[in-house]
Length: 417
Length: 97
Image 1: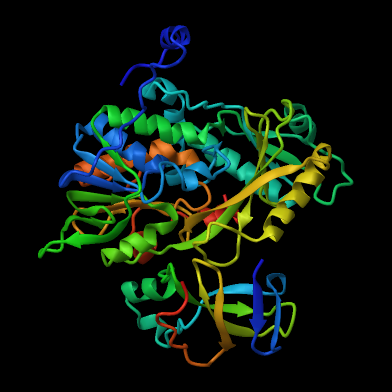
Image 2: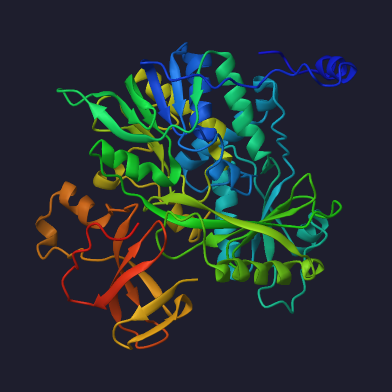
């Protein structure tokens, strides 16, 4: 891997930019690997990277049925935060935020992590109480989060409408200053390039059609559209398709897959300095470096694998955006799209060993997995390499739906994350 | 936006009139207190989540307000059929896609 630097840019500028090598190669699959990761999104590619970097396991393949980062990694609204209520969640999401800080240097790839602050609006007394509880819980866990009055919120985000006449007036806000955004594609590309440089094979257009198990029940490899590939260990990191893959190995996971939509506006000059979320009126908004407003909508009510959602879901979100930010009422929206998110009953992820020896799963990130990409990949690599969970992901078991030790962020947030 | 045929009203109406109510044909156990943790997990948390035909409940909340069942392809979101609550699960193997 040729290191990216200001000198490399200067050198290539002199040569007409003809000397840039490909960022990762596209090898033919080998007969077998030590570890196969199914799914080349951020979490999967990151897992392969940390397997190679931290655990010295480089005989690894990442199999992707489509193209790299073409699933939810390329479809989300890129929000990063760690202000979750429960200790377990604060642990894993803040582990991730700590890794975001410094990830560009680690990967030698600019992931454009921008801790511009995530502000969550409170619109009623219940919101105020819940957010203040979150703030106290976060601070006990060492996660920064602070309370803003409506005037302070407006000072932090000038386009915000804090009129008392609004249908859902802003009564205050919780601000996590370390929260922000990153460039989603760069995260996938950066992990792919850094993993490939350490010997990981990234194999695109290779759909896993079955998971093979030996006479003792342990995983022996996978069947794919490009033939049989052997593996001692298989890690499933397949987001909305996780339950389909796990069923191939006979493991039932408590997941349901829903379409989640997002949309962007036409690009405009910098006008929106932070990320604003409102759970109550249900809208998420930030501005990309290209100038587009990036807006997150809700999930559809029915399960689907169609990667599209209902227009009324988007309209509902835009209703909220227009009321909170009247400045945007005449903005034109450019594109909308959907991704398939795998939702667990407690809205917390599953990163764990499974009842099948050699099979590991990282799923259930639901509507909020992007923020967790580095942390999730880091601890999942540990889980796969050592055959035991990292302390950070130890509570996120598959068995918690049997033994009742739920991490109930669903109840804590009461809406999609 | 889905168009959904209510088998009670016998009319196709926009999705906005309906509320999705989860997977169909999951019988609530009658001996709840005696269930093992495994069986309770299977009843309460595990759903089939198929990529293909799903059998699901809908409620015509802004119409007749009644629950009914539907078979829908989760890849195309096309409804294969809707039928009244209590009717047996239709055999649709090989259809859809």
